Length: 483
Image 1 (cartoon, rainbow, N blue to C red):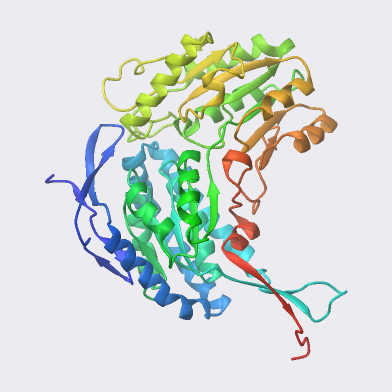
Image 2: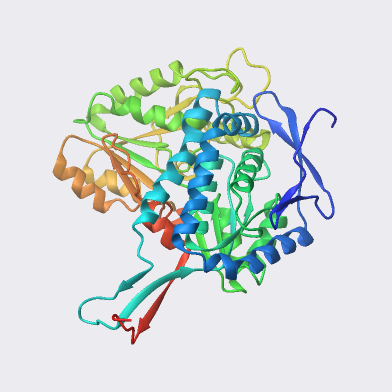
């Protein structure tokens, strides 16, 4: 493996250390199918060392003033912004986000979340009165303790910053296990945290896989909380693994977002929805992958979506431009190809794309932007989270039917509504079973929480809710307000 970047060390107790029993894994560039780095997967001894460091650091860190913790995070933000190009290059190499998107969206998501947490934290009240009816009763927000953070490969810095930053601000100490498929950005992030000079043991990072370090953190008696983002299958396994030690568990899992497009939607609604589905090569849990269209507008919408798919360029992540890149791995590519074929076999109408590599491509894990029409909500492509650039279009005849179809899923992350009727928007916003509803192309406001219901997990990440996720509330009676 000569010539590969050597990223085999872990960060434990304020220092880069070698793994106890090296078990090496190559990191593959999905644009080229070539290895770009080698990491080591941790074992129980590495996990134990990281947890022990975090446990030892917790008493001191939890007693620091909020102002002191805020100053450390402001320093992290300063260094993160300075190293944005390094971060973007790592994300492009490890998971295939195109060069420009990696810098302007993937890396920038981390800056955005750090800034938003700083804003929320400045006004955060750690001790609050219960109410005027109980002048001697207070609610105190206090750190949970040692938290294990398990993050995914599809939006690496989005998720790392949504977990590490609020945990540090809350007064917790952390052990981060990034995805072994895309660990390089977390190595850069760890270098940033190291330069910021946090006390030893407050932040630790151990590479590993789910069955190894992931399970070890989930079952460890000295870990007080697990925060996980990833598949629903893995979230269920983590919940079961954490049960014996009664950990706090926060899960942000999969999605199968419905995008309800009515005949009176604005003229860009379909184009906007299709582009959002294909964005990040379809590898977003909140992607609007089910497009529900009012029947009178249905064939027009199908044609517009077909055009978007055919105009969406697919190319190497190492090229500049507005194209989409590859999906993250051969395993993921194979899964997507199988589901595309299943859509054909189950009778959906293939409008654009389909199985196989895009024209002119002979290597890399690239997927053709694909549109299916005449999908029913019982088909596999409407039930399973594909996690690729595949759009399923389903017709509906009434508002009630649209809601029924949208809610007929195990997931409940983000749903979307496109209509000029304000009263209808308000009705649908309350009727759709999801943690988030976005309408007419308007994104969630700054500081809004990200999270779902049902099989999408029930975490709330971002803003004030994201801070509270990493704390426990304590009820105090007999408080002396004059003291």
